[in-house]
Length: 149
Ligand code: THU
Image (tube, rainbow, N blue to C red; front, side, top):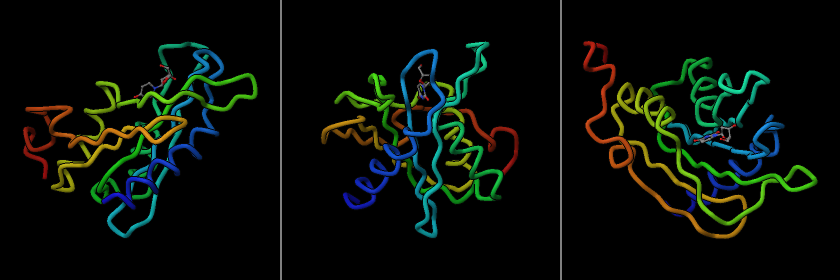
């Protein structure tokens, strides 16, 4: 739905303002639409030990899980962009979830029995590319493979 998509992109932009990204200076925000219409957001959390950094999508999914709502995710909006001198994300190129985040999103998708819509937006401008998670991560390994439903 176009309305949901716009709402998710705006919430992801807002979330990106809380990115902790002093190393890459690339801020990412993610917003999950839940079954009850509420949103759960996350932003990337980098670490001085660079490889320990957490992506925005992973933080959002972990927040949903901590709230006992891993099965209730319907769709996600993601935005990202290089931070300008004031620390604001900039740029008009849509960002799509990295491979690890696709797998983490798949956990929520399979547990909830839904093929999540993934809306990839940019820090600025109107460009949004929408995909089903099953297109971004075909033939996914998931909880069902371990007998978990
Ligand atoms: N990043 C995300 O938050 N999500 C992605 O899907 C791709 C990358 C973050 C990780 C790192 O903090 C910064 O973007 C640059 O890679």
